[in-house]
Length: 174
Image 1 (cartoon, rainbow, N blue to C red):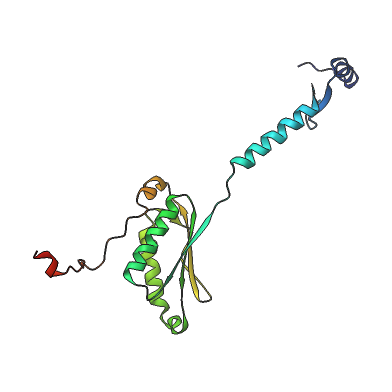
Image 2: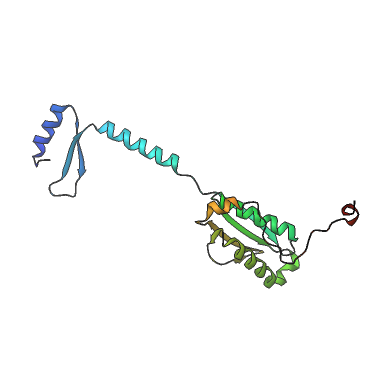
C-alpha cells in the first residue's frame, strides 16, 4: 500500500516470515508484495490443472459418401452427421471418387451441395468443398442450434421423390 525502500520491504518480509514477491517490474517504482511464494505457486498449479481438466479436445467425426450412394444410405449418413453435430463434435464430410467417377466431378459437387444445404441447419461449414486427390471434403462446426440438432439426431431428411413404402396387398385384405 505504501511506497517504501527495498531494504525496508525486505525487513518487513523477514519479520513476517514471508517472501518478497515481485509483482510488476515495469512499474515505477517496481511493485512487490509480501506473501508466501510457495502458496502462490501451489495455487497457480492448481488453477492450471483445473483449466486443463475443463478443457475438452474437439472431436472430429467423419461421414463418407460416394457418388452412386443409395437413397437410404444417404439419408442414414445425413442423420448420423446431424447426430454428431448435435453432440458438439466437428464433422468432416468426405465424398470419395473411385475410378471413372473422377470424370463426373460435376455430379460429385452437386451431391456435396445437397449435403451442405441439409447440414447448414445444424452446423456451420468451414468454407467450400475442396477436391484433394480423389476426395472432396468439407468441415462443419456445430451450430448454435446444437440442442435442436441433438433432438433431431435420428430424423431422416425428407424424401425427394414422393415414394411410399410398398405394402403387400394380400396382407391388407384380411
